[in-house]
Image 1 (cartoon, helix red, strand yellow):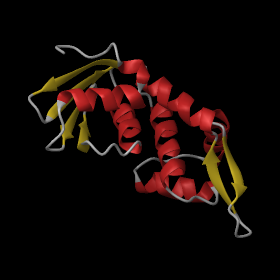
Image 2 (cartoon, one colour; image 1 turned 60 degrees about the vertical axis):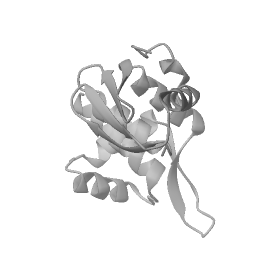
Image 3 (cartoon, one colour; image 1 turned 120 degrees about the horizontal axis):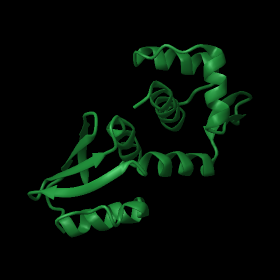
Image 4 (cartoon, one colour; image 1 turned 90 degrees about the horizontal axis):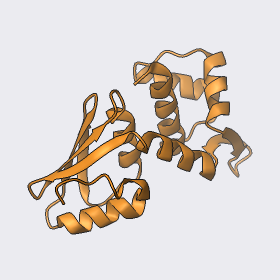
Length: 157
């Protein structure tokens, strides 16, 4: 994945998962993840992903994504999914375009789906560990409900 897409994905994750009150908070959190970024670049990315500061109800402000921006980011990254297949009862393999596995995995993880114990991503492949007690049919239905654009990506089903 190109560094711009990686940075945007990481910024989106930070804003969706954590309370950030300033651009410096985001820069610090990116630095903790090994990503160096200038304030000017961060400002451009925040505008691109439609992040804005909103009142937090306590006299301060926090960064949030608009619902449409979050959905657009998710759909854009998920469009890189090439195929989804099961391997046995407890493993699913997702193939992505080159360099997109980490971003797609982050989107999947951000949904905190109860059927998944965890994801591991490489460059173009994601391995998902499925929790015991869930059938392939249940997992497929959950994924299609959460990510409708992948319903035609399943192979060997």
